Amino acid sequence: MGWLASQGWGEPQNNAKAAMLWREAGNGGVAVSDYSLAWLYENGAGVPRDTNEAVRLYRRAAQGGIGSAAPRLMWLTLAATPPAGCSRQRSMATHSRNSSLRAC
Image 1 (cartoon, helix red, strand yellow):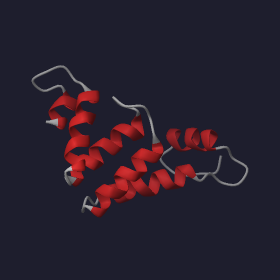
Image 2 (cartoon, rainbow, N blue to C red):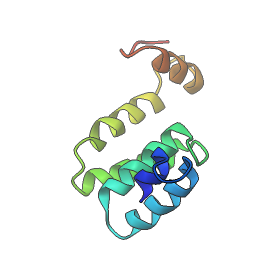
Image 3 (cartoon, helix red, strand yellow):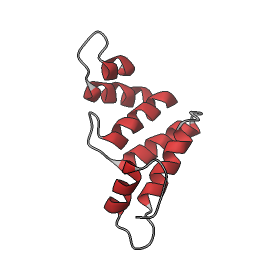
């Protein structure tokens, strides 16, 4: 149901509703729901952007067997620890513009 709400199938697209549905399913042990909710938090879609919550949910999804959660965890962890002399905001902006990681 969360996926349908996030895609706008059968009703207008509603990421806030998708977040609510995925949160309920994730709390019930559905790991793919944790992954989907983490993506919303990572991107600020339907919920406020919250990297810490995204990391927590990606970790829970990975522990639940969702293989695609591990790369997201790695990316967010790398982006959250910028090279020496760089601010986190500048580092995130640099990583967002380029697919390869480089020092800011």
